[in-house]
Length: 173
Image 1 (tube, rainbow, N blue to C red):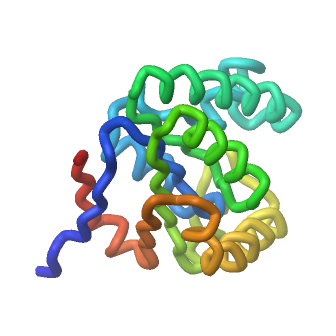
Image 2 (image 1 turned 120 degrees about the horizontal axis):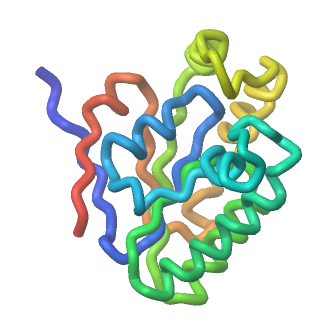
Image 3 (image 1 turned 135 degrees about the vertical axis):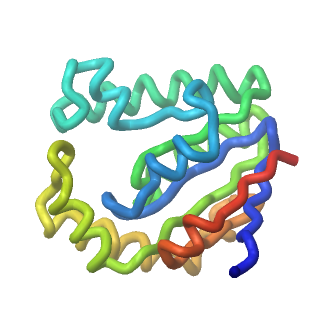
């Protein structure tokens, strides 16, 4: 049996989940964090528009996400951002919020093979995206990897296979 992959998370920090759609970010969040610790872009779309897949609600959902993020970080609450986060400008907004509140930011990157993300997307009954969107997200993720530490993350935890994701053991520090 392979050893667990330790993922150390500061209890008062921000965790930025990163990965293309279908990489398993929401499953990872649900497995390792409490439901009130997770700010999910899909769930917030549902809250705003009544439909988690309503892309027209994305801007409002992210406005709500950033507001809740600032409030939670100001209170020193662990906060997990469950969104693709594959674009630098989006990560910059999150990192700025953590910096303003003096909280550490950890990136947990689910860098799974594109073929697996596409396969999982096809199996979805809801939230299915066009394959071109997932290919674009995956490309942006791969292009971002060399720059993540320089962007201001205190640590980057990289999970590159379904086995590594499954064997991840989150420990609050």
